[in-house]
Image (cartoon, rainbow, N blue to C red; front, side, top):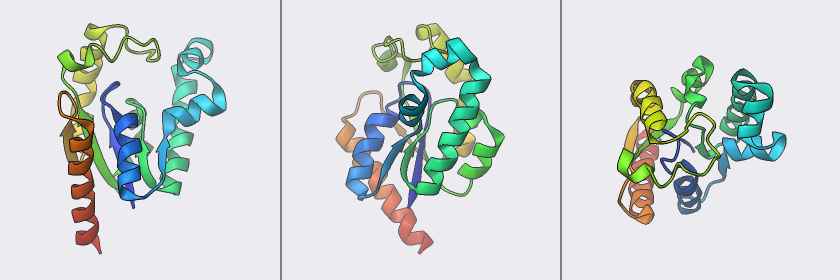
Length: 166
């Protein structure tokens, strides 16, 4: 089973992904964490090498994660790569969304080089949301509900989808 979590920065892909993987009994891979572990902080990669270099590292991390399987959390911009879009058509994709009000407290951590405050987050989300929506098989809003509830809903959807495919 491979389930990919997509969505805007600070939607909760990593936190929910860890719990979902535990719930489903499968591995969890966070492609941003893989990049940081192998290449250093993402903000530093952007600063030193630029966005194209980061996107190449991100694409490589996505390919490896999809080959491993389980629950895969990808960075908010990973879906911009057309090859990744094609790859996602062959797997189950969950879009995590979050309201601007709920995300305000989550984005002020300095770890997101393309997000410098709520206005830039909103502009980024507005630009990417049509793509996120086109790739998603299931949607879950993470704004206000308990993580455990969201995880259970996604797990139930995954289990139904797996039974249907069997």
